[in-house]
Image (tube, rainbow, N blue to C red; front, side):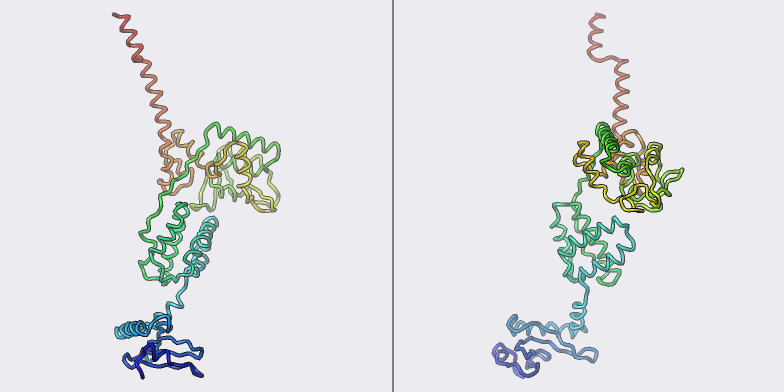
Length: 395
């Protein structure tokens, strides 16, 4: 067996079958000469009664000396009791991020999340995660990979942070499923971007314009009575769009709207008389259980965005979202002096912190009360001008 050098390897010619030539200095270090003429460096050893072989690289891509160093590393690992060939084989069989995304969506998201959340997760997986790191092995993803992906979407902080949340949940489950070591979630310590929450509330004048447009749309038939009723109910109840969209007549009782499921679970929503009056105007098609009936028989309406864009344009409310009607409901409640805790219950919030975004509006009634009180006191003691005039007369 010769010492493997560039000269001795270049002299090797392909045969009728693949064959090996072993190095005279390092036991187990050799080169495989294939029938095609390709030559690859090999490290061979025995483990568990079996001969195992590790490919070190192709001749021409690496030199004989580089391959020799790699062979020494492999033999060193074997001497420590490790099995490099098996580890390489396992790595090749290891799932990719794309496969993990599919498993995560089918076994977790579809079973545990609501349809709206499923749509958000599907969007993050298909548009942002798979294209960026889908080909990576699950075990190979490191924190800098996640940080880079997060940074790529810095122009849209909300989307960047939601994608990071999806990744974090997915890697937590990868640990549960035994695909990564415990405590190895690469999303840990990747800082989120600051998000500026939109706080758009309709003023009294804007609400009046919106109400007028809804009435005109009902009269001229440009929108269906169900769509108009849906927007009125959103304003009068502070509900989420999905809660009104999927509302069934059987959920309406003398106690309010008793939803068997919502974003926060089963929920009873107060139904004031003004909202009941809106419901009383709606026709109830036979065989359709939904309050906001759609164009398809037996189904609820599905398209609210197009009607809303038409309505808000006519009302001069460009940029106002449907969800801003819920914000308007909350802002009016807080501004009227209603305790934050009560507002949270009306909105169906499970955490007070969620409702606290409206807390600063509670200053409005306090400031008005302070102004009214000061005005009464000022009338009693007089203004500085009145006092000076009075003193002049006295003198």
